[in-house]
Length: 301
Ligand code: NAP
Image 1 (cartoon, rainbow, N blue to C red):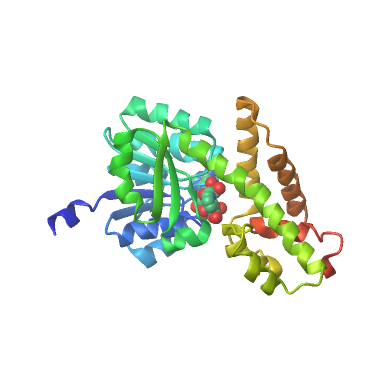
Image 2 (spheres, helix red, strand yellow):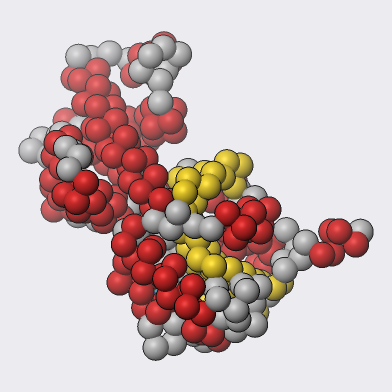
């Protein structure tokens, strides 16, 4: 009983988007005392009605006197604003506390935040996630972490509320670099899957039967298992937004310019996603690459 009670922490969660909303919910379910901040306050109110906890009017107000602060916003500039800006979280945090960022952002901004945290005695972990909306809602995310080992050891049991697979990769920035590896691996795969399913359709095959058999062989993937049905049905109004994937690929391509890695497929898939945005698909799931293949003949898709 006592040990259960001592596991209950005072925490804040900044950013209640598709991912942050359920992640903060899992922290509340795990018994932590959660204060939320969201730019659009209606989402905070909805969250509080569902989970209890407290609402703060700014990141600084949310972060004050917490033991750990979690964050999941959009891109580098959003992260800078929420963490380092005028009403940012970091300056309000006490020395000896931990900041965990789940945003997919650049390794540079992760290192910048870690350095700013160090000056204040706050340990900062860059901890981007994989597993999508369903992973967040089911509490089964994969979390890739960069930062100090002691801070990781303290944060990992708390992160476990919404993760089934968490790994410390190395120093600050390496969580983000690991997420880049993940996104580079996915980009070409989704395009390959889109081409394959579209080809099968044009060949007049029964896609249920095709996927039923090939998904047990070497073509198997998370994307095939979780996306083939919606791809075949042209349903894209859910999931991981194309605009976020373009942000991630931009970050990967920028990092590759620095480290000399060649990313020819990721670069071309990024351009395909630009086409999808042109089709009105900025917020469509990334599996919408299949719609692009029929962009000149939508009736046939
Ligand atoms: P989202 O639904 O668009 O939510 C973004 C959140 O960030 C919202 O709470 C938004 O507030 C907040 N925000 C954005 N800019 C802000 C700013 N300048 N100041 C304050 N708050 C700001 O995005 P998401 O799908 O949850 O994704 C969040 C992060 O996780 C992204 O980095 C994404 O790449 C990554 N990710 C997403 C998935 C996925 O499947 N969705 C999977 C893995 C990783 P408002 O509510 O006011 O707009």
